[in-house]
Image (cartoon, rainbow, N blue to C red):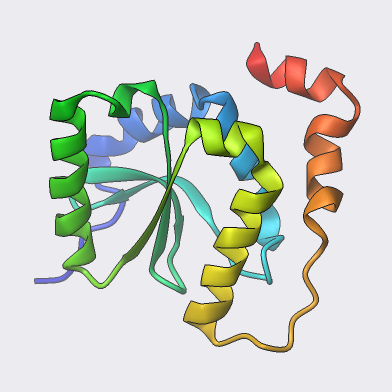
Length: 150
């Protein structure tokens, strides 16, 4: 039986999660959207089986998670491990970052994702934008960060 993506019963949940992203998720999304990362398409709040992952690149079968405060309890950690194992059974690779990692050094996190994208795609000849190029659009003007927090 094949993997089910974006189940109709999850539609409202996915829409809610997209409109209520954490600041860390918003910052990561600015670095992943629009095929900015080596031309690969990432989707946000994407359903896989009965779960929803923060970001997903279908072409590479790569899920990226930004774990905030809600992932800190022992129960949440156990759930995350079980959820990740179920999704990995479908051949999907995971990258996990804490919100603190993203907020402290978004450039480094996006670079780590880029390295994994290169590894999975075997893309050696690429011309990525420097992380500061996308980040300037997110954080540079000052007002954008405040707007994203609202």
